[in-house]
Image (cartoon, rainbow over all chains, first blue to last red; front, side, top):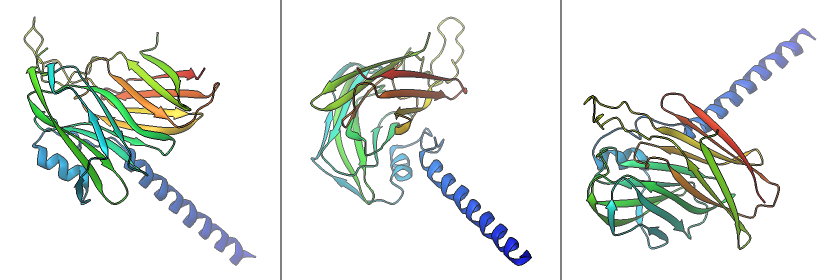
Length: 152
Length: 103
């Protein structure tokens, strides 16, 4: 009886520890990481974002953004995609001090669609990244800014 | 009054969720015009959208989102009476939440 109780306790502790570890790993994925939003060069941000996944240029993502933005402090952007089983949509502005603007983890209940408003500091390429389990699809568009988004 | 406004609209069997949040979204590099001091960074970091208690979107963002941010999402299906809850947390630890019922 004593042995059984020991065994029972051990297995419960082991299972709950595993459960906590699992929970933490899923939470960590959605956590806000300072490294993602660190000010720095565009290449470093992309490396941090991709985590070793290959990047594929595609025409399956529709990045709807004005070619000329009169006011860089407020640029409407809409990303739609026909790619299935997406995990997240990210928007990266090449010339911004902090290149990553937003990374949205979308569950399967949502259509691959997102719309937001960005600040763009200078005339720059804007990238939309759609992440799936294995690869990261990207599309880019150049946006010309006449008034920067950094001024007050 | 809540800082979050939520609107939903049925579109071809899907539900469009639009939200407008009032928030300064300061990135910490702007100067105050009067005192000439830097305005400290103050921006939303995480926005979550839940549908009937299940998280459907988690958005991590930086200060590259415009002041008074607007977001739109498209929910597959969705029925009248479903609850949509939107939460945000900013870098100073402030948070807000708003509930909306699809009509």
